[in-house]
Image (tube, rainbow, N blue to C red; front, side, top):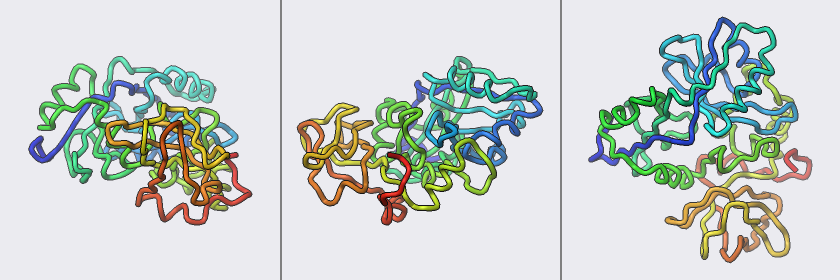
Length: 303
């Protein structure tokens, strides 16, 4: 892995938790519930996925990884503040399956590695973040070993806020800051483009709504990166185009004048957008631009 001289940064993501599923039917249970292919979490890669409501709305997202101590067990790198809720939800679906579900957040840590210039991190501790190559890599390790892992990588330790500025610049959301459980639809949060949904894996909870919306190309809202001119609005500030409310601000990066906003594509129409005292200018990232040219139709889910 490139060293600190090459711009490699690292931080421990303190807001992350780890849920472990083990037992003979652990992978089979997950495969019928989540949006991505559990079998792809084979020890050589992370798999980004989500658990939805039956109505196709976001509940939890996580990275699935094989447990090095037991390749049939799965570690879920999830929002730490909601790890207990995730355990309860998975337990509800377990029924009589031979699966043990544990919140192991106190035992593990998650470290993120990324290059300052946004270039890919070709190798190193952990595995590539599957959402976008510029996101770098993630490593799940025993909590007591996280600092040593970062030190051995040659990376320069950064503040966690630097990692959030990096992802905001790429237009990539964070569930704890940008997704609303039981309200946000996964396609609004760009799960398909960020490799969070496998439409060919078979059934998952919420599949019917998600697949139909994808097939119709009718996602009305999108989480987009925006440039902010003026005082940075607080998260939750409405975005307005004239007299119409067209969205809301979520993550903010005051240092670079950027934010993420969930915006109604069909109401933009070239209008000047404002949030609080600031002017808001959407910036569609290259990885998303080709997917949204025909969206915003009147028959879409995600009202």
